[in-house]
Image 1 (tube, rainbow, N blue to C red):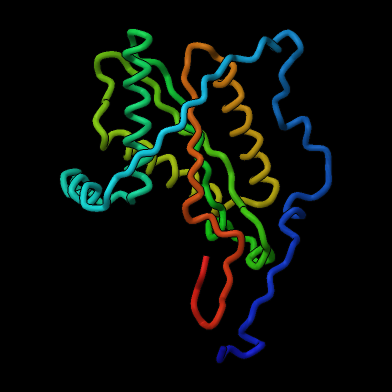
Image 2 (image 1 turned 60 degrees about the horizontal axis):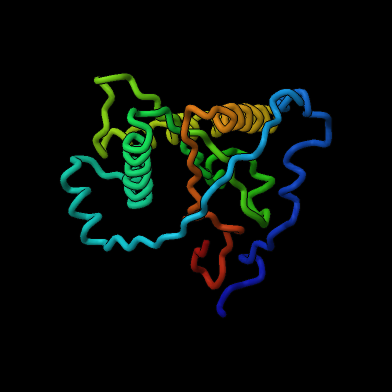
Length: 208
């Protein structure tokens, strides 16, 4: 292949050791027995949407800034779901978007650079309506999404392992509290775009 042995960085399986063994139960909110209620009945609907590249490019040109295609599609679908909820309930409701973020390249843990496995965290993105002044244009949702990602990325960049676990616990608690509230909507983004299990170098070409 033309690649010397010293250029091959073998991956490891130590990603599970990023958090030291200790009792972190006090940091995670636990539902009390009084809050346990009958699970919601959820209707599962599967649909496929195809958005061609030219349509995305045309829409991006109208925005005046350059969000990624993933940010645009997520924001487009999120806005549609919020509008559908408004039609169904007669008013705008708070809405939580649970976004999976890849932590590779966002944290300074050199030991885990060659670790094998998905290294991601669920981040809550909150839409809270403010009456008649609520901004509902597509660019408003894109900006909300981008701002949340950027702010969280800055926190991750400075985080120690203890800080990172505290953030995981905090996000878990926020998501749980929203899910327990019948007056809000909660949606999860299941895309795994750019989620490599290993940042490998094969034959001199970067692959993820």
